[in-house]
Image (cartoon, rainbow, N blue to C red; front, side, top):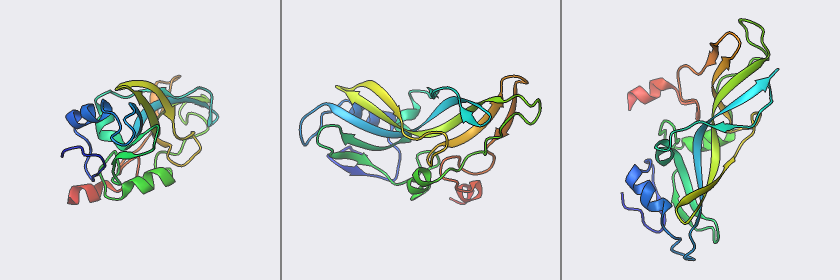
Length: 184
């Protein structure tokens, strides 16, 4: 796939396409300021189900390309890339489900094994990455722990060092059944 001025695609960007897109200037205004929307992994501490830390990003840089769902110019707003598929599993039309609901694990108020109240969540959340002249300058979390779009994939207890909740079958982000994926 060649990246043109505006690309609407169902598929994820390859690493080469992402590298080229993230380094280019806007064809509309010529500025080198991009706002990239992606679904990325982070970790958050909670106590009694309420956040007690800020989100710590915990993703590999190589994952960004496949998780991007929109790129726009930060100056004029021109869309350079957009897709409607789920950024995690690729389900057609899945992006709307990702951003409008929560499909992850329900967070318990305390560890069901040792009753410790402080837990660590691993979640998939929408993020805005701000690029200036091809360099990442800032990351902004697009959803809080209690909002739509914040999808808890795993809950860990630091006291007993056990995983006390984990998304099983299906996509953690859009909720699509894993059985549907096998049928493709």
